Amino acid sequence: MSSLPQPSADALAQSERLLERIEAEIAAAGGWISFARYMELALYAPGLGYYSGGARKFGPGGDFITAPELTPLFGQALAAQVEQVMRASERAVIEVGAGTGLLAADLLLELERRGCVPERYGILELSGELRERQFDTLAAKAPNLAARVQWLDALPERFSGAVVANEVLDVMPVHLLVSSAAGLAERGVAFEADSVGTRRLCWADVPAAGAVREAALALALPAPAGGEFVTELNLAGRGWVAAWAERLQAGALLLIDYGYPSAEYYLPSRSNGTLLCYYRHLAHGDPFLWPGLNDITAFVDFTAMAEAGFEAGLDVQGYTTQAQFLFNCGVLDCLARRGPQESADYIRAARAVQRLTAPQEMGELFKVLALSRGLEVPLLGFARGDRVHAL
Image (tube, rainbow, N blue to C red; front, top):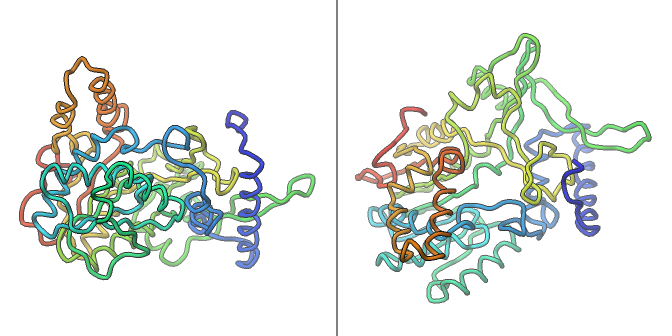
């Protein structure tokens, strides 16, 4: 990974502390832990994980840029769908994993403009550092609405309204499956010593068992004659969707992320899986590099998420590309409000919209899935181009 910039000495020291914790857990578990557990520690270990350790993650100075970082037009278009859900249920929103708080600010301001400010706007955020950034962002950009925001430590017992989760499912810990002529295995994490005796993280396979094996068998994964097929299994995401189904009285979950339906996710051509790491806007494939300093993500199997919701009693209201969803929600009307087309502000905004919607950018790769309960009207974001049939 010589092309990646070197972390600071303080960052490396933090990563080393996390590595010591991971090694201790592997030893306590008998020499092996699942990749899901490793990913959970690497991202969320208190004070040390990527999302809980305090390093800047979002925007040009971080490791990646999300849609709300690109332009407020994303939140303004999404607000049209959030408004429709609230008017059909209750005027309440919960945003899961709110990043810097920009999406919350954009949604609140646009909902105010539309005359439909939520009575309550909850942010479910586990990172103390990100909570502080969100508080500061809201105080600066939407000071008259910031008092409506409250931070949550866990899912509510009951909720009616709109739940927004933008790029949340892709950072839930995943199990790794290996299908080969020898059968099904789960790929996890162990330690090995190199030629000079230095211990380092390494891959280690064990026979797939329990819920992992059961889910893997249901997928009927390819078994290459002369190699192996490696892929991810997001049991945490399925459980999370089911947990919301227990709590949602009326309203909808709006799940926005990059991914595929199962028929595309497990194609034989995708034999190396979808796991990716991000460091300073550079993608790489080594999740063992500098634990706690890299984002680790996996594409979302939207069929699995839809099935989890449906089996738990939710309605699958819609599934489409981010581009189609934003067009249906009036993103071009939001753009038109930016002023004369020759102005610098309009040109910048138009370029951002192109990045959000172009097929070669985020438009096709990102999808939107809506799971609902008690909604009697078709959702605006799926009025055209609904792809539920592809799930």
